[in-house]
Every structure is written in C-alpha cells, then in structure tokens.
Length: 91
View 1 (cartoon, helix red, strand yellow):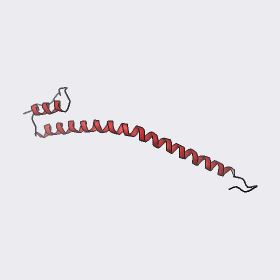
View 2 (cartoon, one colour):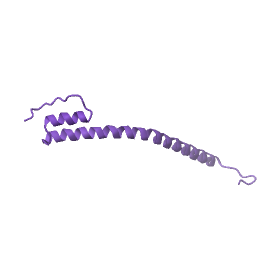
View 3 (cartoon, one colour):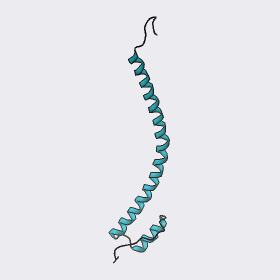
View 4 (cartoon, helix red, strand yellow):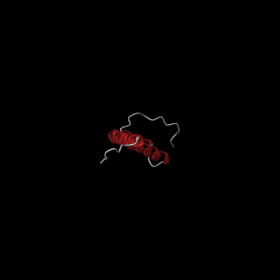
C-alpha cells in the first residue's frame, strides 16, 4: 500500500496504463482470431480437400493411370459437372 506522502511517478502511471492497454488489446485480438479463424479454417480445409482431389485426378489422367471416360466419371462423382477442355489428343 501507499504510505502517507508517497506518490506514483508519472512514468509509473504511464507504464501501468500501457500494460493495461496491451492486455486488453491482446485479449480482444485473441478472441477475434479464435472466432474468425475457426470459420475460415474450416472453409479453407473444405476447398483445399476438393482441390486436392481434383489435382490428384488430373495427375492420374496425365500419368495414364486412368482413361478419359474414367476421368469424366470420377470428375462427376466429385461434383464437378462442367466438362473439361482437353488441349491434347489422347491416344
């Protein structure tokens, strides 16, 4: 406790105020990241998993593991109904 006649110096008050502002700022920022980060992460995860499946399918077609008919069937099974424009002739 403060004794009679003692007082806080100006720099001590400024330091306490700065620490309080930093504390509340970090707390609010942490809550914001927690709330918005989880929704962004789940949406990004869904998009990346679908994109990875599409890329994997494209690579399998390129390596010749599957033919074009299988590619179209698997492409539709993944939910990609739009036809692809294949720039090369498939042998």
